[in-house]
Image (cartoon, rainbow over all chains, first blue to last red):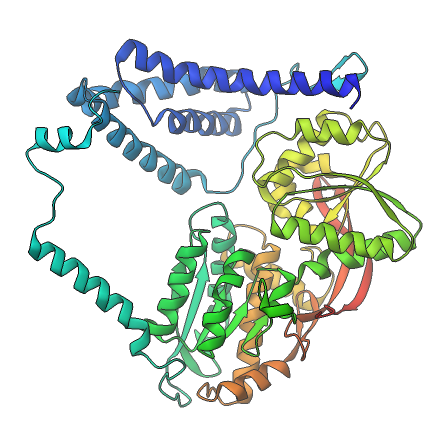
Length: 139
Length: 423
């Protein structure tokens, strides 16, 4: 295995790790600040991506989607917290049960609204290129 | 998370997890009854059907899970076929029973068992994942249930194998789709005969992926070709950059790949963002790599890819043009290869039962009639191989091109009448 390959794979690992870190830090933040075990965190994240997809498809603007998706999910959070989670303050096991249920609902709603096939978003201009680094192209 | 001790939790809520004696008796006797159920029904003893009587058709498909879109597509073409034929097959009104396997083998086996014991279907169709097809093979064979496989492509389902492991052919099992041999061996043979000898393999590391890679390897070695290396990401791999990086760090420029659906999209996107086309690498693959579901997302990124399959939406024959047009009249989308497989399965059943006047009571006669079926399908001439019950079909070599803003598979060549070797 050449040193270039090791270096490139280390970068690949780092970028994928950074993505997982962003996701996990949200989960940890909600637990730390709100004392809520939110197992629907991943489903919220996914819903955000689909909202972004719809915004890009209707307006063509990636940056608008970047703004709209967190706002939409924030609104959903504001609705769900008093409606469901506030009743279970401090009861972690019950929160687990409730939020797993919420995640199942979100996943199936997404299946109904956006379908179950794979969708993807093109990276916006400026971020869609690749960078040459020490003997290899890196995207 | 606190308070996980279960007794503590149960006490807090004021109940324990003990069963009362009555609950215990109800539960165990229900379980015992359920266990007796299958034995209480004689296999294959569905009441003899006379023409005009309702035909029970079980469809074992995934409507949830990763293959849900395949199931939906196959349901669409089932409904299309029935609507075109007055909801009848061989003059018998069709009672369609859909069962969802959710891409879980155990669930699918249960649904198949329900089709056999409870619904007593006359014919079963469907089955997307190969492990499920292998899993129900023995039950179907024992019950003498006519089963037309409309997707699962594992070679063993229509072959003689030692001790029937992992599966083997049955007189009652027909396949209207393909065997993985047919997708991968002919293109390997074809490309190496044309002079492309060195190959690097990239394939999803699961049964069907490894089987296709092996068949492709057999095809190229026949003409003196060699495999210089391989990379096998797991199925449903989230990030292809590490694997495509490995491809770029080796010198063999011809890459044969087996990916489909989400994996194919991820692979093609990484392939481009890491600059493999500019570095002279060329993409080849089994046809699923560049089917409509993938091209819709990757568009011209797949241009130049050469793949093989027994059908393409652009295929130029009268039956295909009619099929594509009819499909689009009923649904706001293009048909895919899964829709074609299911449509041909329905057609084959219809043709066979018409010869018997719709009578499905004698299973051996139905088998004989299916073996003799021959018709023009959207994919070309369609017949079953009498010794394996796998279709004999033409394999098309296709190249991805963007024409008038549409990215399509253009047909560049045809390998006629490919038959699975059956061994």
